[in-house]
Length: 640
Image 1: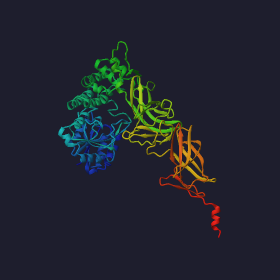
Image 2: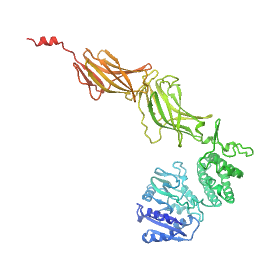
Image 3: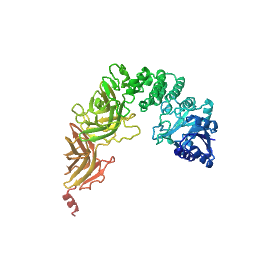
Image 4: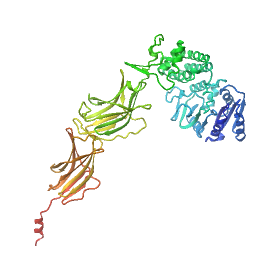
């Protein structure tokens, strides 16, 4: 037998069929699977429903037993009868994806691992999230955070269970599986994750009648169980960051969770049992390394429990649970969250219990770059967590890569309705450098966030996995260089930067809209110039003879468009010298200029007398001018 599926069943009649049906539909096949359903003294007809299913499904084994007071008892019974190479635990409220068992057994077979976690899908509840396949890892590897998931709803190699003699404590309503799973994690020869498929649908009852939804085990038994797990972990991992990370998981999920919404409504005896149960755990395992993972609320609860400040604890616990965070105050380089008791006379709680400076993080992201009339708009966000919008500011700093130049632009908040603000920085490229244009060179854009004396900074980078399309170069003023600026992303980190005074491999920001040979003759050109500035931009058409560099020039008329300018005008062609003439354009702005060949239009102009337009090998527009013959000479040659 490949896998034994063990289901503890107690008063879950409404969801039982869905759970069993998900097993019948498993692609691993019924011949590879045995299902052991243990009815733990149900009183809602669940036992009779199991018997009805077993009559039609030989692979389903039903065991009835008196109620044992928790899911551990029926799981132990199932283990005594399991014969599969692997054991999978499924709760009767939940169900599986059709390929779950096949994928998880295959992962264990291929990589020789003893435990396999399938991706959880929380329905009406939060669930640990594993979003990628991990062939082999261990409990001490932080990514993915294996130890975050201590539920037993996984695949275990049965030889591991037998070797360790793993069983569950009977009569415990919650956290009964933590020590089982923790011991398996530390003893396993490898742990795998199937994160590319929705394996386990973890359901909270809509009626709110499950044991966990109603609060779980009483405080005394709950904390005794959690203390046993934490003691086990301490025996496996030396003091340091790894132990602190694992212990912090217990404080977050099993200790602080008992000082939440239910605490104010508990009777005084249960409140006292909660404090008394948590106190030895704080005394033993609440270290500075654990504490730095929590904010002011965690530090205050720990301080109150350790020092018997029951009245202050009663004020702290409900604070902020309604979604309104206590006020945050920035004082110099320190940040405090003003929970009850902060600097109150007679309370005597040290300020550092309220301090959240260690929680302040910078968050920054590049979301879009777009040219605007007059400059460049950078869209994204840059802010400090924990601190209110009014108490911080952000700037976009342009830093010269090979020099000392540095200029600042405000990064302004447009709105802050969600988790992150919508922010923009508008760079006036004609005046960004102290009222003048940026000097030629490379410029890196850095987000700088400040609050009081706190400063954080870093480059603006698009979100991982996203493709950001940049808008290409534009004609803008540049000091000591050609009048082009190109936004680009650096190699490696992909941070936003500007190339000023050159195009690199980018095409020039000008295209040929039309070209015609008119009577006169003349070459009429219409050019589209992509520019962020329209004032003081001059576009000149140039006709240059290739052999002698003789030139004919004409300043074109310009009008504004959505992307910059359209330039139109005529180059006179009266009596041009024979030979090849190349057509160029020159753009000038704020004292800098650049001349480039004109790209040939899709349709070449029709030839005129002695003038033939053509496209060069590089796609540019040129004219071939042939000598004109004297009409009198032609007539004399025809006469006898």
